[in-house]
Amino acid sequence: MNTINILVPINFSDKSKEGLFQAIQIANRTPAKIFLLHVVREHMPPWSLLSDDDKSSQTDIIKKTLLEEAKQLIGDSTIELEPIVAFGKLCDQILKQADDLKASMIVMGTSTAENIKKKIIGGNALRIVTEAKIPVITVKLGCASKNPATIILPLDLSKETREKVSDAVYWAKKLECRICAVSFSTTRDDAVVGHLKGQLQQVESFVEDAGVEVETNFRFYHKGSRQAKLVEFIQEKEGDLVIITTHQQPEIVKFFLGSFAEDMIHSAPIPVMTKVPKGTFKTVTTMPGSF
Image 1 (spheres, rainbow, N blue to C red):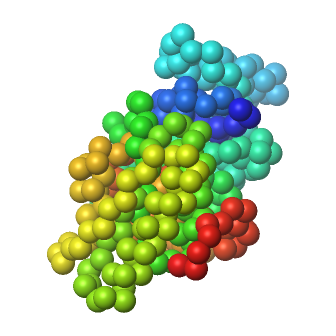
Image 2: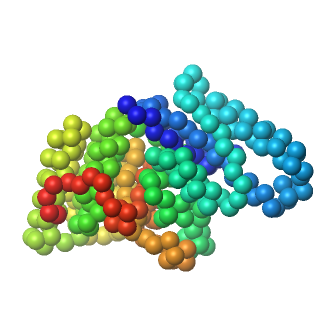
Image 3: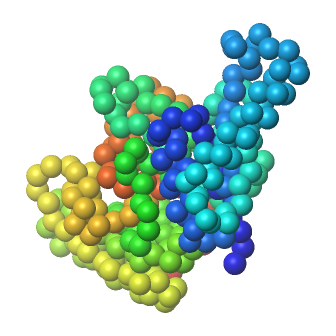
């Protein structure tokens, strides 16, 4: 099995350690190398006041500390680790390093949205989610999955559904998980319901043929939001990872939040894997069928 590269931004906060813990749980399931990334704003104090020798010395100290923190969480595991200290703006460096390392995913801890200001302005994680070309797993403090077993896969009638199912199968095999797919509907219109149920049947056949255990669910709801119903479903099925796509454009998302993807990142009680649909990039694997 090929080794995957996992990039984990670390700023030594509790939330970044939660991201590292989650990356370790993934690396325990599939051969992986974890890159521990710490980003320094070189042109700001105190770094701007240091000599080149002092900067080099401090960089070595940071790398050593990164390894020490990771090894405390890893225990007896033999996961390969590599510390990286990069200079520049945080998001720019995360995206750059992900490209340079040919990372398979980015795993990062994030905060909950505690007030309306955070929901409007967003944060570093949101930019990474909307601009990264690879899956990004965001995990809130206290929400990491120790032994992932169930991937929650919400489905709709969007064209990205095929790609999302293929991604879910790929990661279910890597992590030795089952898939629990669900479609929600606010209408009992025969055409819509028939389309959604037909899609679920295709998904079930596709996933089973790929050798992955799958369960499909169809749910009506009349009150509340789809996001709230999905959170309830996650809790009911004891999910460990939910996979969604984000359709937002980076230039828009900087000023206005509120999409389903963003709401899930803030509210899901488990890690959220997001991925920008390859409608922009090109899909590699597709499901048969025309839904």
